[in-house]
Image 1 (cartoon, rainbow, N blue to C red):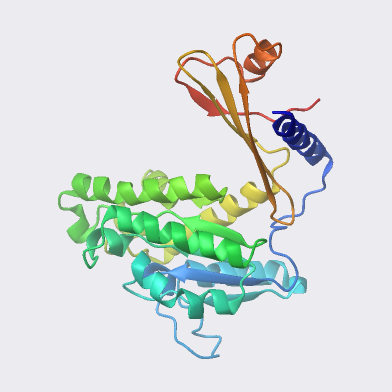
Image 2 (cartoon, rainbow, N blue to C red):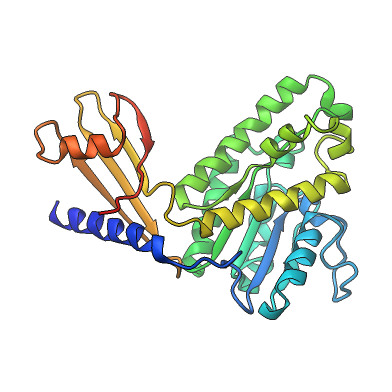
Length: 306
């Protein structure tokens, strides 16, 4: 318990120190960084292999991101690589992961996969999708402890064949969306909520303005994806102090358990668990810091500032 309390103190200090940091826009993209885009046809965007810069990034949100970031920060000398392949599932990614990801030594890795697993899979179950995806993340972080990984949420829109029985198709895809969010929480990674972005965009224009077939974006849809990616990535790594330093849960007996974590600038993650029973002298302080907590409830832990 003493070691855990010491870790909690370190986390608290880190959260407090964060307030004094000077934040640079998209600071996660360090000078000379290699940014790798992985996924299926939505990310592939019709790219061509080779070194022709007219075609190597495809014609999609990955290309827009490379162009906008490259124009804004030319002095950082960033390299953008697209290795997405049309039709890929998570299992397909795994089959080529060594050559198309690990061997490229990315500093930033953006992944979006799940549509083919849901609608065009080769018999992969939801459990397989999660297990394979989880293993890819684990092995990548093990190989590159300081890597920054961005997870993209798969999405669907009510256009063409996807408009038929859309509610059922949406419900099926939401199972994969939930997996992506769980993995994001497990590894403390940003999740780009593309579905939310497209749903919100429907208040501005019909679905076929954003997607031409229900899963592949139009040029406007790709621009929306790029905008959402930039906002998510910038907010996740550049907002100090963090909105949360972990999760608090109250058990049925009233015990409060704090699952604490903090990520340093070099990517190192510190984690720890604290438990406070009803008779603990700090119980009331912790409960008040959380703004109250009910039995069976979980909520984010705001940073400690003293």
